[in-house]
Length: 264
Image (cartoon, rainbow, N blue to C red):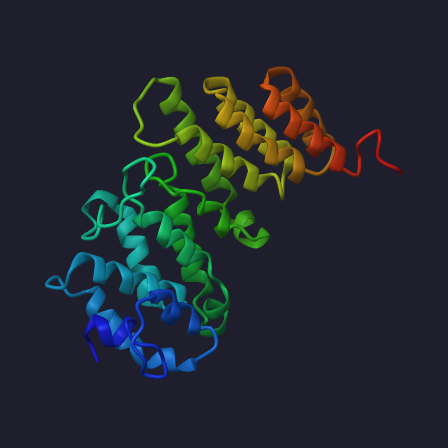
């Protein structure tokens, strides 16, 4: 069963469906998805198949924790613009490729990887995607990769890619999407395991871009970072943010257990 319609256009009870998510996410409840894996691998690797069908096969396999999916993500990340399906899905806001954002969401799924013993490959795929964050658009999907264990393993990669992105911004290099916000979102992820490092990374970004949108995304660090670093960062944002940013910072500070006005 190698045809796209049979593989991803038909649910596991044999009923046609127009919603590919019906098939992809029902796999978490149905081991019957395993019977479709060989066909999806063949479709993903078929140079004669439509690029969008190959891409969706990769998304399905990756979501299902299959080694073939992770390995293909890693290869795609090694040379993004030469991936067969690059630009077959376009983000409406920035008119740039959105396939890596969708692959990040697929890699973020962990349950079947643990069941199938492919967690190490999943982590390798996550690392490969994080390393692209200064050059490829991920919408808000990178944050979905980060449970604490994954983030701890990728911390050096996150620091490296944020550093590259900051240098690119400082040099005035053009970017077709909102790179500062994407980098701040990565720093916000770090705040759940290392508040001091998260603030350091965020300050580096804000030194080269302190737009309202970037500052607004930085507020999440105030919510997430434990200890004095998060509170001090919030107090800094109050000095540089506009009215909306300051309102959100005050809310974040008020919800912190270590805020002076909170009961001890």
